[in-house]
Amino acid sequence: MTTSLQELLAGWITGQRWFAGKGRAIDDLSIEHRTDIVTGDPGLLHLILSIRQGERCTRYQVLIGLRSNLPDRLKHALIGPWERDGDECAAYDAAHDAELTRILLEAMESFRREEELAFHRVPDVEIDTSLRSLVLTAEQSNTSLVYGDRYILKLFRQITPGVNPELEVVGALAAAGSTHVARPYGWIDTELDGETTTLAIMQEFLANANEGWAMALTSVRDLYASAPEVSAEEAGGDFAAEASRLGIATAEVHRELGTAFPTGVIETPEVKRMAERLRRRLDEAVAEVPQLAAHASVAHAAYDRLADLGRTVAVQRVHGDYHLGQVMRTPSDWVVLDFEGEPGQPLSERRGLDSPLRDVAGMLRSFDYAARHLLAGHPEGAALQERADEWSTRNRAAFLAGYSEGGGRITADDAVLLRALELSKAVYEVVYEARNRPSWLPIPLAAFRSQR
Image 1 (spheres, helix red, strand yellow):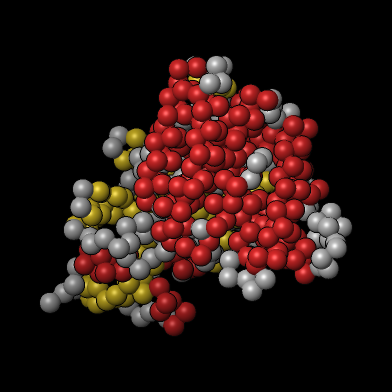
Image 2: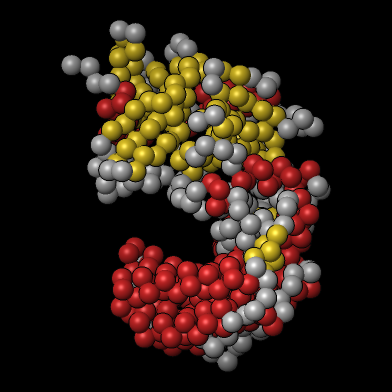
């Protein structure tokens, strides 16, 4: 009996890092859209799958390669044997096949259309179609292909109808001359539910850049390895100067976003409702993670101050998922990546207006994580706690000073909102760590012991 492509995919997709429905049975998998980009051997199919798990229905994007003889270099990407037009072939994840992924470059360069798929190139650029691709393995929710040392193509695996915020934001900032985004080169889209829907974005690959998270961890390790009397400022890998530059860049990006997109304000009654929403999430988190109960009063006090703020809050487009893993240090400046927001959130929410302090709070929490996550399971963790506090405090302060220097506003009233947003982020982290990494739970809990 011939196995259908749907059956093969149902067995394969649950093992993929980017599949969001792990741990739940697939009730139904259907192919909603199929485009034959390349016929013959090898062949290339583009699929949009609709997967139902209970009441939840999610769309995913898959590139399928088809070969009568699968070479050894592609066997790790095998999905399974499939009969096509009466002939048996191997179906596999074509993102790993450089011979086929080069066709995506050619299609963007020539503005090609393939049935439901539309390939686009930024008008003032040329795309080198001779480059071979390599899949990056670090990502969780998407798949990125690096072409030589020039381009990175991000395939959005989980598909939501509408224009992806990253394409919208990066395109607008690049057109305005921002130095803090990677240059866009092209994109792929289709029509879903009557909306133009982004499937992939290709940008400049920052080959000579370093990730902010990796740089921060190097600094933390240098401090932990130094003699006890050596301060964070004196340690060889002091990060404070970079934290300050990152704060300046963050403020500049916020200013650029405020110019390129509409802005608004949250009126005082809505600020009170925001505080109530944060309070409800805190109560839900305490019910799920009892260890948080002893610290809940700290967050409640912060939310009370927010509710009593008595002023409007300026809102605009923001990054939405800002942390040290989303920034890269090039030889000249900091560059911000991944403006798509939280992939699991509705597109309308990811494109909505929010306080820029939401991003600031996310970065402050990231500094805490960089300082403390190495202590989990560390034999000298208790002894190093003070050094972790010192590193985090120094770099948080440097980042905030840079943010103010770059034009970011943090008045006394803003500090009230920032504190509430930071503790709200820590509440989210407490639940996440309790569910996924219990040994890391002390990291977000430390945010409630701090008197910042």
